[in-house]
Length: 289
Image (tube, rainbow, N blue to C red):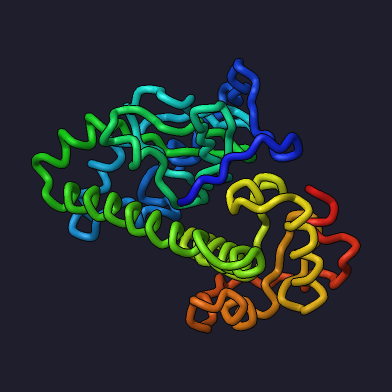
């Protein structure tokens, strides 16, 4: 992902030095339902380990308190000890340049793993902050390696997930590194829809966990540009938006606008939603939600 660092006050991402609160006494749903009933078990459990292998995964996963909105999971340069699977909610990774300017370098959505890019250096290169109340499944990396040493399918799973992380980073860098602002935003909406779909949610009806400024920081676009583009997309019936609820009305049209992406319709989750009102006065970008 390209980083566009900026000191613009309206998209300044500085957090207080003190860590935000963690909801005490509330643990991740993974400790309640176990790996067998978790909706991401298909992504976390390698096919050859299903069945008796679930006990292995249950031994690997550790209790993790719920993170409240604004809670800091890890600071920049914090030691790397565990991987985290997002079960509920979303988090952001904030990178900082040598002058202290910050920009959002990554969003972590349900089903995605936090920490794979910290394995090599042994420390986190970004500050990881909860965008909303989030439940994580923690997997101590040392314990994972010790189990993987005697279970080749588990090691294969780990290497595949690391490879997928590298591929995702390459694709994102290519998608957002060139093109005009409209192309970049269209690609971002398509990408978010596909990532939500992989997490078992709708690919076209999105409840965005990030604000306009946060999404703009991630894409390297100013808030005024974001507002203008969302109004344009709404007028063109590409999207409908009410606050943070975004409906992709014309996926093929977004693919066409993205130009370098082939037109196709993403997989949609089987959930029925009433249509969002087509009212530019309430769009996500205009109110800055």
